[in-house]
Image (cartoon, rainbow, N blue to C red; front, side, top):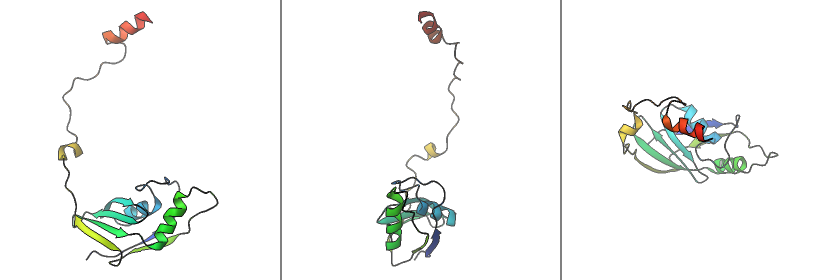
Length: 134
């Protein structure tokens, strides 16, 4: 079984409402452990990958996390979500599956292109023609 995850969640700086990758819970999970990557936080499910064992895990969101997500996405300036500690244990574990390998690994590592460099403005015949007609 995976080790339990215990993280202190605080509302810091700017967060994107209704964005499942840029919320305070996702940021705190990413910063808490460098082994945790690809965090997606939805109201009912928190998923992330672990580099160490190449697995993707899904956890059911605890009740306090659901309330925190609702308060963050509410966009009401009078309601500020309270800090809490997120505990993800085996009780909340929904599934574990192997991490998906990249479909196109060449896309991840960009190869140098052998294309001709672009000409600066004013040197192409098309650009000169547009200046004459204007």
